[in-house]
Length: 390
Ligand SMILES: [Zn+2]
Image (tube, rainbow, N blue to C red; front, side, top):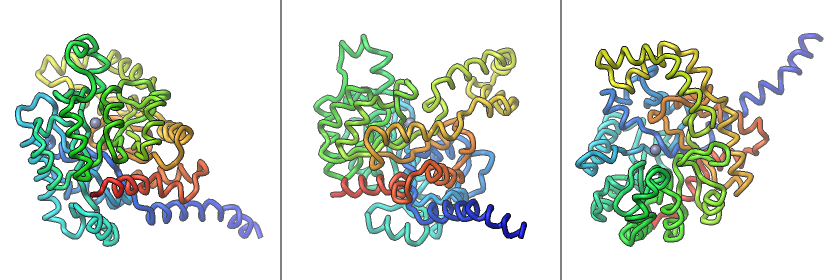
């Protein structure tokens, strides 16, 4: 009898655990931002190998996490002399991976190819160019990036282009922008028009507020915000204010949440500063020995892993951003854009691309319906992508 009661008591949990896994498996999961292409070049690794412990992503772990569609970020900083060549170099990296692994990953350019890849349980890959500087002020280069599989472009990264100002510049260089321009120029509006004509999503992550408003007024298609969060919960320069979130809702677009701890938790910056201050002697000596600052930080973070772990926000805090956006505009305008391999701290439990099922589990526990969960995981993105097609 006792055994029977125990089984009955345990049953709901067991059913629930199976539920979330099967709901996750059946849903189309889209992540709109992953930097493994840049990380692969920097670390001289390839994602067809097992990179556990070295990166957040590789082909095997994408599969484990149930990722169906990945938008791979194509990026270089604004200082590079030939960003268009750099963009192509990163794309070549993914083409080589896809050629070596035709049974696992396919670069999809049409709706039909995308559907087929999902059906065949291969990772459907597309590119997202991160930063309008990569087209080098040339619409023909935009066309060629589209032809190679680019399906969104952030109008800026942290650096402005001659035709669009970034969130970083609009918040830190107010005086100099007052003398030049702020927002989109006429050429910037031509870029939007060409993107709309091609069927390339206009991505408003990283752009300044003026650029945001100019772009959302100029576009004739629903926009993407591929990796940003809510400013009201974490007031940093590149999160979206309430009126921006509402505008994306009215436009029919979608906001994909970024996993970076510093864009989720407003106390993270202070914790980070305290960490650097506490270990400043070691950091100084590493730098004096010729180690670059970023590597010195990484080495120190590895040494004091438990402190770094404690500074990570709980998973629930990421979902607070999701709830907040849903409270403003409903469940049709939110998705996931992790920024894996482009960030060095994310919420607890979300260690790498195998962790997506935990998001599904948490959403169901919060009371989101299966239908809503499917929208958040990928349905909303698919709707926006389809609306942007020619
Ligand atoms: Zn970014």
